Amino acid sequence: MKIYNLFISHSWAYSDNYDRLVNLLEKRSYFGFRNYSVPRNDPVHTNGTDKQLREAIFRKIQPCSVIIILAGVYSTYSKWINIEIDIAQKKFYHPKPILALQPWGSERTSSIVKQNADRIVRWNTESVVAAIRELA
Image (tube, rainbow, N blue to C red; front, side, top):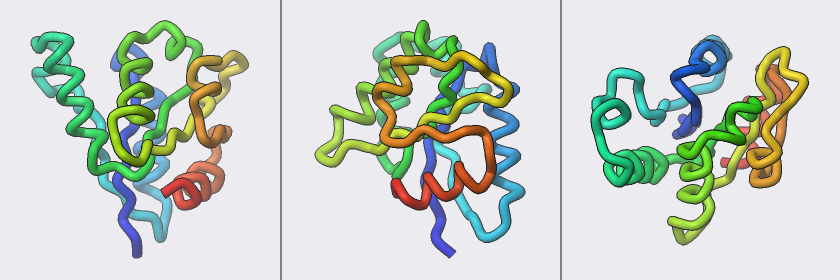
């Protein structure tokens, strides 16, 4: 079984959707992944400088085959999600594909994330897994 290296972008202020997505992927049979997201307890995201956080995000994204961004409206206003998009698209010889996931129950989604996504899917296990497999 192939193991997918994933970077799941998120805001800790809106961590419920992140937690639901990780749980959804963990429960999916015949699908393995490594989660390279910046963990909540990582001191860089609470104590580091912007430069240190940018470098940490680069190191997290580097081994990944797909970048997943939860496309909630808050994403439009997140400086860090914009930086993650920039890193994924411009800092590697081969840009990293971006999968936009429309959050569960969300009627409005981030236009910035959708404009930069290689694929956009709704909150459905099979859609998410199929898109990851396609993009990787």
